Image (cartoon, rainbow, N blue to C red; front, top):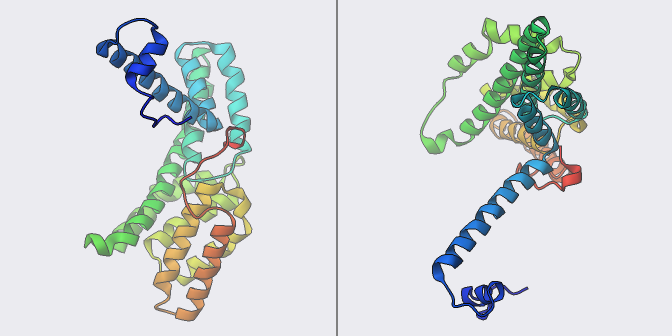
Length: 274
């Protein structure tokens, strides 16, 4: 319908809602404001629902807050199964952290404090790894625009963090996890290392090969993040071998387009949402 038509006015709508009554501006404003709030709530609910993992996590958390233990237990299993079948991006680890925290709360409500303590320790590793991967992606973004911002990040400071004892201990924990693909852990570990030093040919080569062999383990956002880093590194590595890295960059861009991962902005039909 043509809602921009001049005949489609506030008075026209009011007349359809209240036939025979004189137009009241305040009443119409109240109605329009109420409809806008309903529309906004619908958009939020629709957005959450089409992201299946977010929908399940939020529902699980709300059930826990209300101590609806039986339903929460079933939903936790369902959410866990869904995440196990999901593909990866940097947000995956934060979702696992939330799931484990929800499961820990479930055990606490059942007075299983030993099981709760074990889950709390597991959840900490996932929370760290989300931070670690987001850190790597953030460094990639900053380095891509640092010239425009007139800043210079010292690699030595970043290496000090990435190579710290605490980081290595958490990485060791993640590498021992049976419920996470080890190739994914290794790719993200290489991502952080390459983000810090994008002219590291050995790290670039290792990550590029490993990523190419494991593309199907990542969703669209996850692929986009990793493609962007590799292409950014190629631009810097051209100073070492211009022809070689320009060719690799072109191949990466071609793969990114073929995989529909050129943009991290997504619209996913509800039945396909992860």
